[in-house]
Length: 335
Image (cartoon, rainbow, N blue to C red; front, top):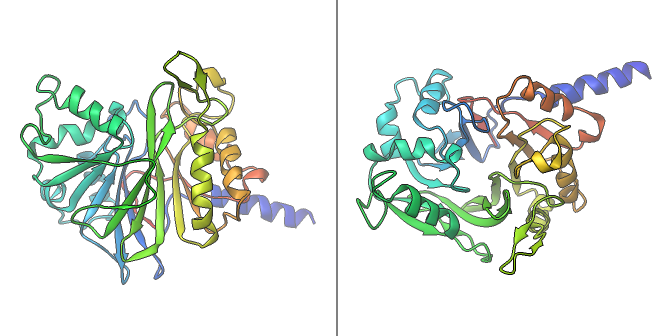
């Protein structure tokens, strides 16, 4: 009996410490983490390249889920052989990244994208909520903070504003992917968002990418009369995802855990801890088993020992039902 318990503990820790997902003949998506941290380290900020996989070969057309770090992340990916060793990073950015899906307008999610705009190729879309697009247009592409590379200026990019109330996925131009958007709360009164990305010709395969978000029980929104209410956007999102989980269509959820347990709720600043993550995931699990869905843990703050603490805290017995993956910059993930 003691041996069985020890084996169980070892298995849990091994699963929780997974940092990559290897190639499989059943892979639907290929992900390259260009940046995985939650702020502070300008060389490793939130950004994930995503493309479809056909016959075990990644498509050459990528989208970028957020854009905190771009160029340096590509350099690391080449060194890690997640991209061919002869990849020209300039040409890759210009030719192979087809769109930027921006979850919200905070700098740690868009800095790398912004810095690389002068050399980018025209005809691409910036995709997001109206509130996010407005921040980029008014506060960055305003010919003061940065040149206007948008549709009213140099026209390098056009804007694709998604409606969070729509139940229909929109095509991502020049890719075989479609996207649907959902609202998230990230420090009152600001909105973040989640993207459900699906393969156009194979809608049975999807991934869900969440930008920064706090827990439903903490996050509030200010109304016009200055009163607050709890929109419970995560609960709404989990209800929408439940049928995809039940049908084995949702391959992965990218979701943040910024701080280890023990941080007071009033100092979360619109983020999650392991305890809050497990509470939220258990809401989704109440609809259906989650054993086939990989949980990609993002946005860990690069503070002393935080990553190790979070991995340990997500290795405990009540996390057994979830398949956690802790991405490393440049190391590919097959889904």
